[in-house]
Length: 496
Ligand code: UN1
View 1 (cartoon, helix red, strand yellow):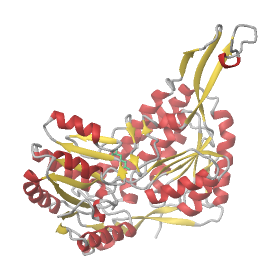
View 2 (cartoon, rainbow, N blue to C red; view 1 turned 60 degrees about the vertical axis):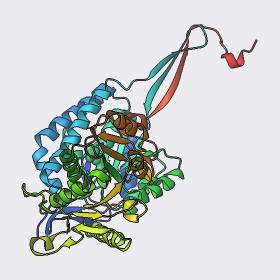
View 3 (cartoon, rainbow, N blue to C red; view 1 turned 90 degrees about the vertical axis):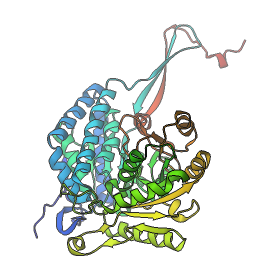
View 4 (cartoon, rainbow, N blue to C red; view 1 turned 180 degrees about the horizontal axis):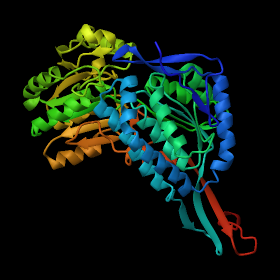
């Protein structure tokens, strides 16, 4: 079997892991299809990458931000040219269907152009001084070397959410992509290199979380960490990084609810629920995993939803007629199976799906049936814990207030959706839903790059990507310029 062997990028050089070890990247729709071998990096590779980033920082921070931004514009244009190839690479390594991997590359293009504009903003704040002939302002400064740890479900978009704002703000980066999906991050970094990014400004080290991610978290020269992944791992990341007082941005799980009221446009709500629950095979942080149905429409919605879920075509995402691709790996299949078992043991009803697909062509990969569970109550584990697969729960409720209460009754708070024609209720829900994102008459997935992305409760630790990213990747410096030519004491030191 022949397959390409990929390398890390350290200080502008493409290098294997020092140990020579590699990890094979397999197509989850067909394990016989080896996408490539990627470095299995360890602490010594990370140390070399951090040293390169530290050296590059001395010059990159002095490149004017509008110039840094021009590189992002060129990278965005290259991504546009290469969109189809990069989408195909992504479907092969991650599984989601081509229409969605094209969307993932598009999200990186959008991010490049959005963030490039920041090169001519990076606004600070000016404010009057309490003294005469003294000027006061606050400016944004880069942090230094930042460490970025990214997930497999959006393997180009999410790295772009972190790399591009970090770069435009003047930081240098070491990025560790998810073990399952290093190629898409490699492609993104290749576009940056081809766009003219100087050596050492971005360094890519592939490998596992424990061998590659942990040394990055702990490295004393890394000034901040941005992580997207599970709440379980995020909690460890936060604790490790705290030992060296690094600011950490954690973007984690969800248990996102779509609420459908009796007055909703039912067809629209069905379309939204189907896309929200089974798009990306349910493997989005923003995926709809609870559908809350008001009693008046519950039966009709359920019948129609189950029919539509059953009709979805599951298969290899490279086939344009396929609607639902594989799950990314066997571990995720086990999680889906486990949660179906837990749900049934707790009294939920299996309305469709519930099993791994293992016959015929499905035996080559890791596929799971689109699964709908009925009769779910808000206290069941299936109603509270993240599955990250094509498994959705239907929960019924009586009043609007009760719907909101159920939506809020979990530990997560990423995305929420409400389907209704009642504008008063829509605005009340916008106010009362405990989540970082609320959609009205649109599914829980589909966030745009220039709005804040992130959540409350155990979904995150207060930071935001998109609109909030520059805030995370910069630090404030207060600047006072005294042009009085005499010692002027601040008011506190000058009490009458
Ligand atoms: C994620 O689920 O990890 O809002 C990110 C969306 C996409 C991003 C999802 N734009 O569905």
